[in-house]
Length: 243
Image 1: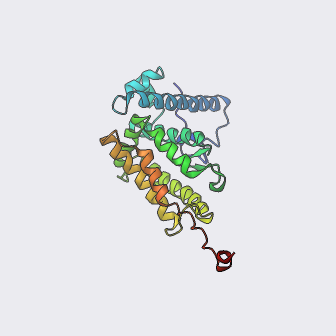
Image 2: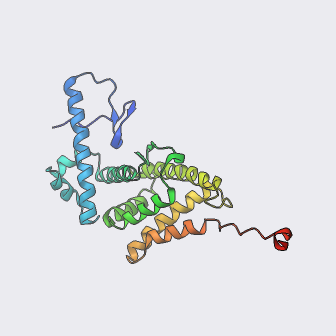
Image 3: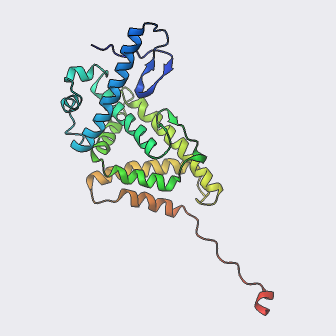
């Protein structure tokens, strides 16, 4: 059986692992690398299963079958079912960030600076529209985010850190748009970032209740409301009128 990757070490690595800094055995390093690779396979396949079968249809058994493991074998790579589902959401953020050309993820931060990121409006609206194509992942996010309100829940810190990083990146991008006159500066960027997060999360709940709701159009309408109107043409001068 593959050794569970160690957690209390110094160097942070993907998918919630920590890289062992004192391990010198080639066999142990190889075993660790295989464990990381297997977790990566599990999380990648789990995204497909949940997107296809939905959150309720994606039992631990279903996910284990998808990667050729028993339920016990699958949970060998995770401390609990809750941790498994948290890691699935972390993997989703990583995939979404790559699709947006950002790199990194919301928990550990993006690798692309906000002022070099693709257009925030087009990217955010595109991401919200994509969510409508993966209802199982939307249900998982909504359900787990509510459960994670309990400070003792395994996903609590994931959602807290994720929200802080999302708002930090978004507020910096909004500030750049305000400086260029593309978004009104009547509201500070930090508040606007929180409003956009609240609207996106709230629209997901409305969409789950009313699948005909267009989440992307609603978020785009918020951007439209924050776009300053075109400047009025300058009034003709008296000299111009006389001429």
